[in-house]
Image 1 (tube, rainbow, N blue to C red):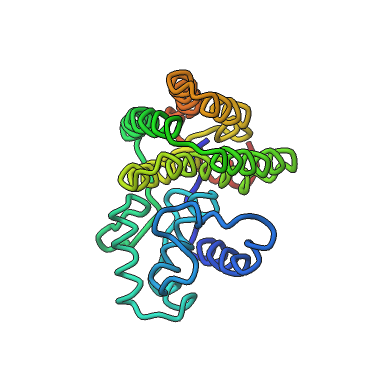
Image 2: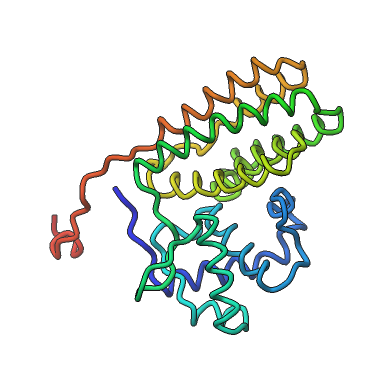
Length: 263
């Protein structure tokens, strides 16, 4: 069933929780933002707001359709409306939010056709990234990828879904870093964030956003220098992820009887 958009109160709570945990996150696990090109701790307040909203979307704390009221953001970050609007414009440019006339900003909700197109482009982009990574990966890079896979595996067995989703996305971004192409990194960051929206909107509950074993096998092939084998496996991996996305839904029954639990 299609998930209902969160209210402004839910949005406020999600962002408040994200800010409250950000100071301790680095002590318990690697900071996801260090895996994102151009998004680093210690940046100015605009980047901090962007990071908070971005990571909340990536970890599915903010669902598609969630309202992002300017007044709440101003209060949470103690900034002016001009600052908030500038950040929302940037988020809209990166397809993380949609700006609607007379309705404000909401977390973007990709359509089924956009879903197909996004996965189509992502498969081609990650094929380029994997080939470059196979050609350039050092022993230190492989060790770093395996360390990240260990964290992913531990999160999976703790059933820590938000952390697992974050680490699964970060794995793909880490491969782009190994490929050492800033342009590809930037494009992939946008596609990964848009895919996270798609998973939050369309994937049935209980499905893994990414299969850990497939990530490990990709690293094995990269370490062996088998670029084409790694490309083929990554393509299969992304096709499986897309196949798990159910883009056709029945309209939700929002009748009074249903809301009262009478049918």
